[in-house]
Image (cartoon, rainbow, N blue to C red; front, side, top):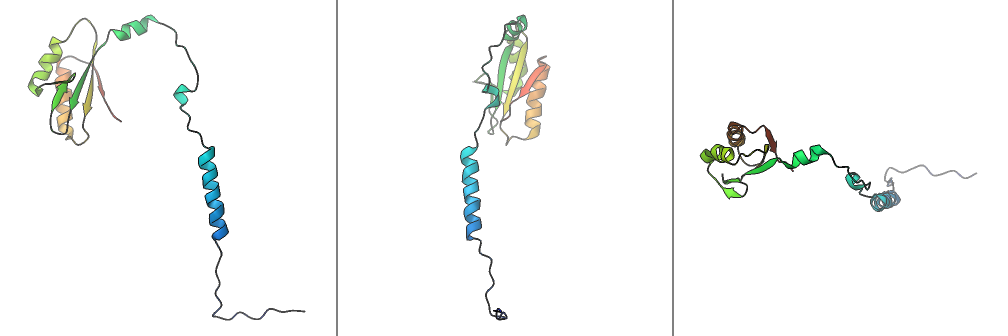
Length: 133
């Protein structure tokens, strides 16, 4: 019968991880290749029906108010002063419902955006959206 020699304190005991890292990399590559990026909103080919409400939605007059980090204010792509914003929105009012999208730079102070929002509200516009990414 063969017995092992007792271990010496200077023996180097290590766990070999080379094969485990190979397996991890193979699994990583497998999941990266087998994963598909599906756009769920375009997965089905759907033809939407017509409705009178869609025609009413087209009667909405949409405006875009943009605020840059340099405090530049634009209404529908045209530079405008903050003091003139309410009057300009009121003058553009027609028979159509109006909506405003506020596109503000994220570096702007919160109060600046709220001030513009107040001017839009003074123009009696209730449909207000704030654009985000």
